[in-house]
Each structure stands twice: as structure tokens, then as C-alpha cells.
Amino acid sequence: MWENILRIIFEQHRGKAIGIVLGLLASILFISYGFWRTIFIIICIALGFFIGKELDEKKNFEQWLKRMFKDKQ
Image 1 (tube, rainbow, N blue to C red):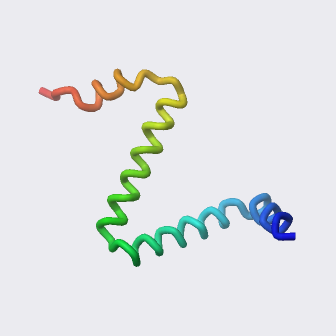
Image 2: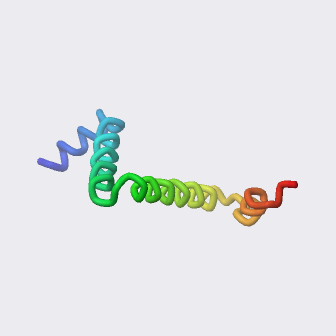
């Protein structure tokens, strides 16, 4: 029964369901760790996602790092 309900919710209201879950997670983090620690966690997650996405797309990660951190003179 619960499987069917969750399947229907995710098929018909995927964006709303994901938004609710992310909002709940963010509120728990803010209450548990405070604003700045939560922002740090979110930045680390976003950075990890971006690096993982680059690796999944088989892009040259070393070249990307060199471009990001090269000395801009």
C-alpha cells in the first residue's frame, strides 16, 4: 500500500516531494548545527556533486583543476 502511495506521489508530484524532503533536511541541519555550519555542509555537498558530475562525464579533471587554480597574473 505505502509503495503505491509513494510511487504515485513521486510520479505526479516529484518536484514538490523533493522540495519537501530537502526543506525538512535543511531545517533539521539548521536546528542541529546552526546557520554557518549548515551553509558549510551545503557548500561541501554542492562541491562534491560538481566534482562527481565532472568525473561521470569523463572530463579531464586534472585540466579542470589546473584551470581553476592557475595563477592569474
